[in-house]
Image 1 (cartoon, rainbow, N blue to C red):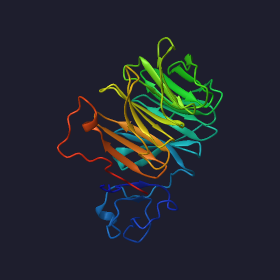
Image 2 (cartoon, rainbow, N blue to C red; image 1 turned 90 degrees about the horizontal axis):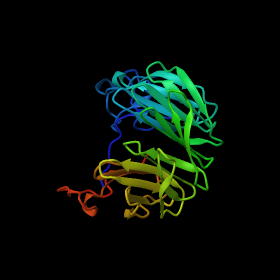
Image 3 (cartoon, rainbow, N blue to C red; image 1 turned 120 degrees about the vertical axis):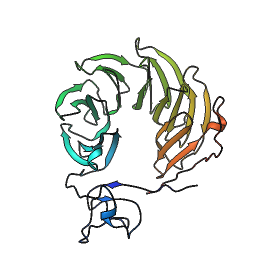
Image 4 (cartoon, rainbow, N blue to C red; image 1 turned 180 degrees about the vertical axis):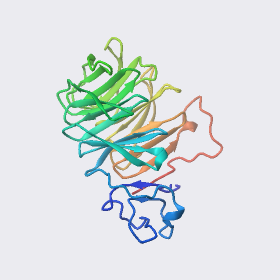
Length: 311
C-alpha cells in the first residue's frame, strides 16, 4: 500500500480546519490547505488565498478540465472555479430548487441535474441559464453529454435522451423496474448503458431505443458505470462492495473484484489498464489489473490496491 498526499483542499473555514490547515504570515486561517506539513509556510505554497464563496452544504458532484472546476451541492447551486487562476471561484449557478446530483460540460455548455426532477443547460462561458428541461417524474441522478445530445436517468426508472439545442426529449428507454443511479454514452454515441436499484445493467441502442443486452451479477444497487472505449470494457461498481469488468460487445463478465471496498462503491473509472474507485469506506483505490486481462501487457512493477487515501 502507498499513501497519496492531498495537495489541495477547498472549502470554508469551518470545514477546512484540520491540523493540515495552512495559515498566512499573520496566523490567519486559509480556506485552502496544501499538503500535510503543518510547518509549511503559505508563502511557499500556491493556491492558498482565501475566498468567501463556498458551498453551504455537502458537495455531491464535480467535473473539471484544464480551465475550470465545477462543483454541485446539496445547497442547490453549482460553483465554477478558474483552474488557471488558482481555483478562484468565478461564478455561482442558481436555479435548481433542490440538490444538484450530477453535472457535465463541454467547451460550450454546462449541464446540471437535480433532485427537483429537472435538468438545466447553462452557457459555460457566461453562466447564463439557456433552458430547463422537464420530463422526468423523479430525481434526475445522472447526466452526460455526447455532441448535441444529453442522456439522463432518474428515480422514475427511465433513461431519456435530449437535444441540447432545442431542449426536446428525443427518446426514452423503458425496461428498468426500479430507480436508476447511473447512465453512460459509448464514445461513438451508438449505445447507452444504464443501471440502478434493480441490480441489472442494460445496454441500449441509442438510435432505436431497443435494449440489446442485459447483465445480471451485482447483488445490490449499481451506483457507477464507466465505458473504456479503447478496450471495449465496461466497469461497474455497486453497493454490494464489488467492482466488475464486462465486455461491452458480448456482455460477458471478464473480472470480478468482490468486496474490493468494505462498503458501498460510489464511483469507479478506468483507463486502458487501471481502475480508480471511491467508496463509502472512505477510501480511494487505484488498481492495476493488466496482469489479469488478455491483451494487456504487464507493467514491470505492478501495484494492486495502491493509493489508499482515507480522509
